[in-house]
Length: 111
Length: 112
Image (cartoon, rainbow over all chains, first blue to last red; front, top):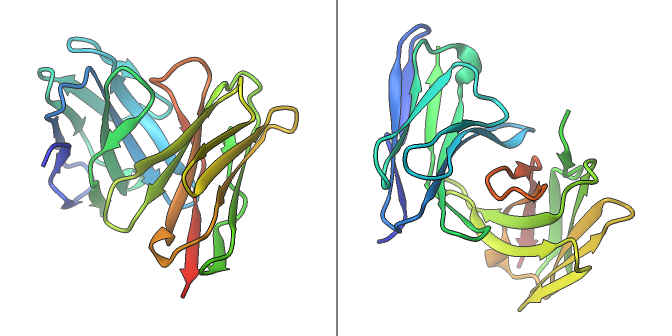
């Protein structure tokens, strides 16, 4: 099915470990996004890529890096995970209008 | 400080009745608003939108109302169905579709 695919779905990390969250879309969308969802906070934008080759910071970029590998793929990297990064991470893509298509999320726990 | 607020964490409604979900915002520059629905273990899915040049937008059972002077929008679902049970997020942007600010969500439970 067409859409946004995120891997992995679940991950437990120890403090200080690194990992990369993967995201791919097959809808030929130009823009891609990484959000995190925390209880009582809604979704907050971490980074986005308006088009292939560009990336920009969102509301909460500290502690993260991103790579827009090609038009399909947008990865999120935690270089040194901290307990404050325990969250559910959503990747999304958008064509030319306002509607985002979200992936099903990655539940990350940092212990 | 959150620029988009959904002050009701949960709402319970009887099947067939109206559900009203509320959302307040603080930034007067916001000019485009979205509602998303989210089921457990799934990503949010787009429901309905409204531009600041309108005060109402309808799509089937779903209607969004915008009161710019009060910085308030609401989503009406009529009639409510058990399948509408989900978490509803409102989101707003200020002339930038790359940056939407989301509320914390309202969990709607529609009882049969």
